[in-house]
Image (cartoon, rainbow, N blue to C red; front, side):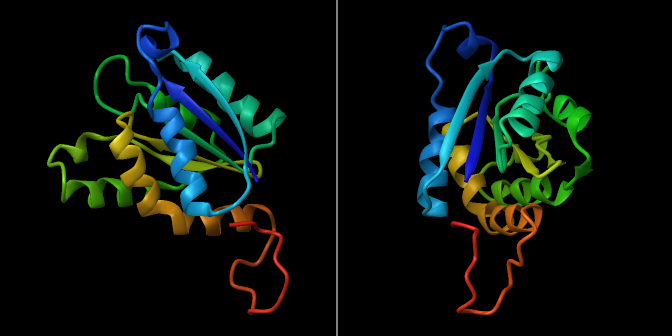
Length: 171
């Protein structure tokens, strides 16, 4: 499985501080999916053109099964990740953002300010996550079953095939 992870942060992209959320995505997905995965990664500033270019690159050229972003999902003027993501999506999947916000709300009363979204581009599932490492873990744990099923569907596999049938989805 090929997974792209994109950290969207002006300060991390400028080297002002280390990216902690991107590596957390990789660590959590390795734990949750229990599969060998080939990761490609990038750090870009909060600029729509740069974010859309990287999303297209990972989905179209690199052919990632899953592309996960972290950062830029809030309401500050520089938070443009959802707009950039929607610009490249073919099908939006609002349930991802809704589930993450509702589950996070039990822990953080401001979780409803998140604008994270998800959707598909070609055979890639693209998911926005918050920028805080602890929120990355929390949200990935919430949406892991939907990621598994979504990737299987995009690969043209039956995620509900009877036991004993070989599956090429490695989770």
